[in-house]
Image 1: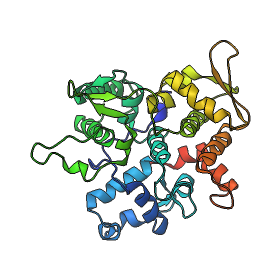
Image 2: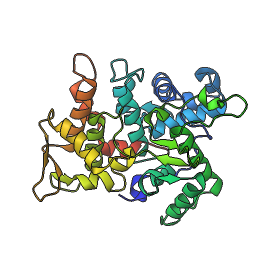
Image 3: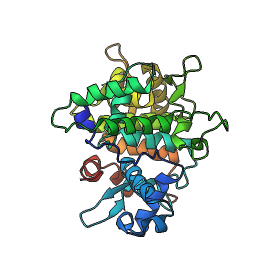
Image 4: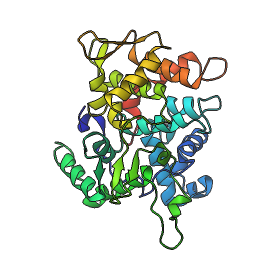
Length: 331
């Protein structure tokens, strides 16, 4: 997958704010009750945050595909937003660690509103790096995209800064020992995807299996990715799922062995999935519609049934990828 296929040319729409605790759910909740809330002059009072934060919450809700523009003025929750945060949703209060991984995947999945982040996770290969190195790599990556207007360098720097504040541990303040970010932390730091090197002070991607990353979320992301990119057939090599740009291996920083372990565990409980080695290289095989199988895997993880959660028809509609691609994000 190429950047131009995966992302939209939007930059620094987050008002320099990384996503804070509660913002994802708040974006869904306030939109469900009042579609025009983000354009209301009283939005800061109604939502209870400053004017810039109103725009930031709107952006992060759109970027995580929890809300979307509609034909008439205003925003509405997506089927994914309803399924995750609705009254009978999968995880309405974000209590399950798998939800954070799912939101991380949604931020990068097409159509991503974070092209700078997409480049960093998918096309930037050093394990240890500085923010200057990220800036250079992203600039080169964006310059290679035809048809996109070149973003202002300050916008690129803001997106890189937001990424590092989203995933990396906050720096300690010399005076107090902790920065204000320790108090207004970002939930996605709990994923442990980026750390600081004690030896050099640089940033490091954390490669390999993650203790809080459920195999079902990895498997869902793999199926979701294939549903967006597969043109035929019913098998895919694990090396593709681990190393192809846009695939979950890059998003979660997993090796091919990590992908195999996660998919193998999910395949034991999902009849539509199987791991095969017809040509010597391990492959994922599936039967039926990829989007439906992806939904089955995710629903089984959250243990949702028509009696206790989102109904079967709504679940299948949730992963209408063409509908999501057509409606999510600013136009």
